Image (tube, rainbow, N blue to C red):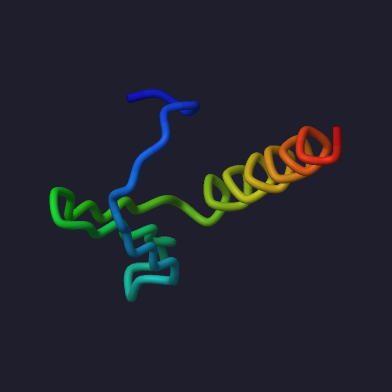
Length: 63
């Protein structure tokens, strides 16, 4: 499966700080239970990448 492969699987996504000073992205579905911990600096870099991808996706949707 790649970025452009559609999926009907429902997934929950939770994001928040841990008690260890990390940022956790937690992905849960029927086939996945995946906690991902990042330093605050890495989390900010991920947030910038998400924002850039969202901007690009909006421009594709308006064509």
